[in-house]
Length: 166
Image 1 (tube, rainbow, N blue to C red):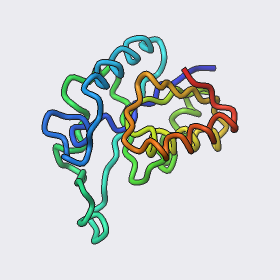
Image 2 (cartoon, rainbow, N blue to C red):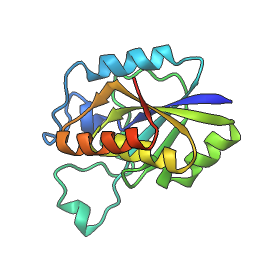
Image 3 (spheres, rainbow, N blue to C red):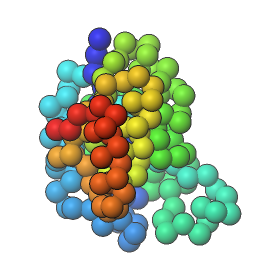
Image 4 (tube, rainbow, N blue to C red):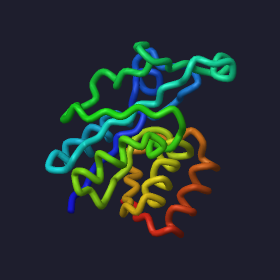
């Protein structure tokens, strides 16, 4: 069996030079994410992009990341070691059924999650991975968080469900 590294929402809108004012992540996050990517070159590296649908609710969101916009692009400077990219329209990357199909086809049984945000999409994807039967590693060295209370809640839940933390 194999391991996959899921790099979640490391996009221009979140951590790029002209990122949305809403996002305030540590300046060293990209360096940490890149180091973890480099350490996982023997594994499958999957990039997950958060994409917003153009609708009334999202029109009033504090940031916008619509299909075919520069905001959804993977951030400049991110180490790209594969062309495996999946888009998601909700917090949990496993809401895109093609992700599970790809991981199953490649006999992946363990996923490591990094990216943004520890109190939202990273945690929700880790929970989705557990629900889909994967062993989960949450690598805190490569996770940016703005929602600390939610992160504490989700990380506690992940630990109870069997995720390991690095």
